[in-house]
Image (cartoon, rainbow, N blue to C red; front, side, top):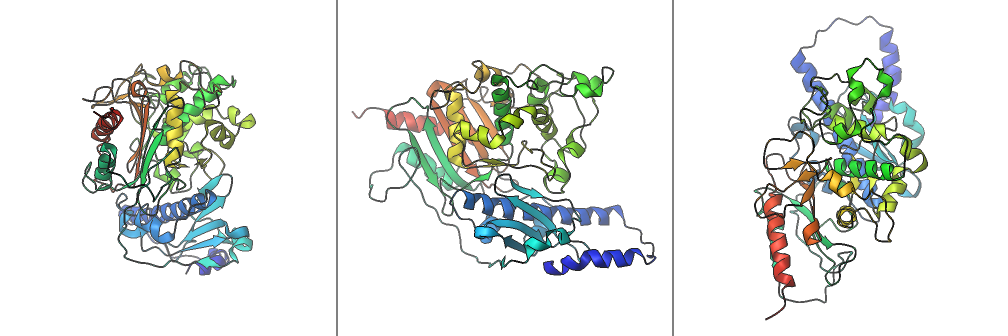
Length: 486
């Protein structure tokens, strides 16, 4: 049991004085143990973030819901063990989530995710001593109740908030049919859509927004953005440049402290935003498990990889590049904390999480509602000017992030500055840009149609939502619905 781990520190201290019998561990056994520790960290963090951030917004998530959505269909080998790992949720003043503990080994402390109301949840390093949390653990735990209820569907239609109006009865519109198809997994076998939102620009007249949510999710429910956070990170870089932050120059060296002889000195923020730093890392580009679930830090995992290509010559999608782009503009957060910058963007239900030493993990670890992502898209439709008329991005920022000036990925999509370019795809306007994230997070911005489309999901590994076909069908449906009656 988890509470037994509270006395583990004393037991470890006693055993340290006793000679231990040598025991060799094979690499396979070591990897299996490490994977189990990662699975426990993954579970602790998601239970903490999903529940705490929903409650912060006035919504509700339960452990059962998190197991059903965020903790199912994930990558192997974590999927094989994560559901059965025992956990406890501890709450403090006013019932606010304080910690989540997840057991994973009899001879090690539980994995711990710690929550701060203003900064979100952080996963602590493997082996963190729970004794340090004793004063906050002596509160009732929330126990898990399992159930096998199948998720149902619900939808909302209406104004900018997408709130429902049960009194409205009408024939389904063309957009209703497209939304219904997305909810039924017609755009990808096994895909699981949780939220759909369309919006037009701030100045548009007439129909402003339409939305549909799966039961258990609504306009106040945040989800992890995964790599949509990279496009949010690029937006923060643009805001820092517009504000004149001394550390935010696109073509200045990111790490001048390396010294003039170090070739990494040539890596710029522009290289990082375009996934063209040329640096090596030991994991696939979108996998940073030791940081995300293991409790290491941005400095330990992202900062000092060597070059294997000249900067600006090769495209390699890498979390580390985004992490270092944000590290490069840290001076801009001193006067304008990220929470205040999100408020300036109109994204007040969005929170960016950090590692346990306070470094932002803006390659993935942001929680936002579908409405907040739509608001971000509207900012780009309005060329960096907020709804109240305040310019917060440089005038040329939309052009900058949507220009494929760096090396390009293989495949049908292009890449700008941390935004994907969909202009190679048939049937989509050539100026379409998209922020794309794991498990089906999509923010599509179509300036020529004055349109933002958001799709949130929890797609299992092996299932892919066809966001290009969905975008094409949404645009066609809106054109049909907007056409004057004969």
